Image (cartoon, one colour):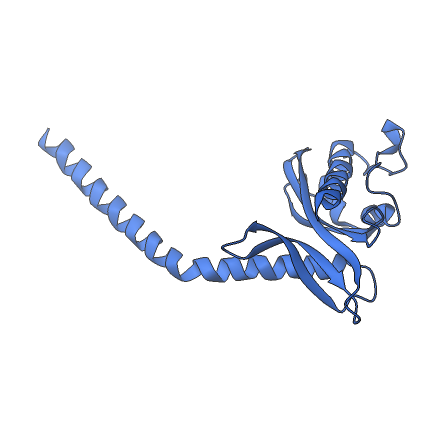
Amino acid sequence: MKKFLSLVVSLSVISGVCAAVLAYVDTFTKDRIAATKLENKLKAARAVMPGGVAEVVPVAWADKEKKDPVDFAGKGADGKTLGYAVTAGDSGGYGGDIELMVGFKADRKTVVCYKTLAATETPGLGMKLKTPEFSRQFAGRDGSSLKVRQDGGEIEAITSATITSRAVCRAVEAAQKKLQALK
């Protein structure tokens, strides 16, 4: 019994020290991680905007207090809105959640392109959703009516990754619906 108590106390002390070290390290890395995520979102937003955009400004926030923007408007040099970049996702990918930054023209319907923010699809198959060959199929299409050919649409599914292709179509549609709801 004495040996058991000694082990419990030892493991408790070690666990407490590890938890304290992790909490201490978290205080230094939390802001840097948030800044990196914001920069990645801004890069993705700039990449999916139509041509002529001079400035990208936030239009919706996940958390206003933390200034965590999720959706952006692209303004021309004259201040006129030329396009939008909207985050959306779908949980029905083969490997789980897919999160995209989708660019739209100012008409709020026409897709410019998309960038993948997060995906855990099968390497070599489903991860082809990041390739220009697949993503360029969405350019110029109405974001509200996207389907793969197997479902009667015009998007050529990734070979052996139809589930992923359908999830991307649904994510782009979700982005378009979200954009329509933005004021």
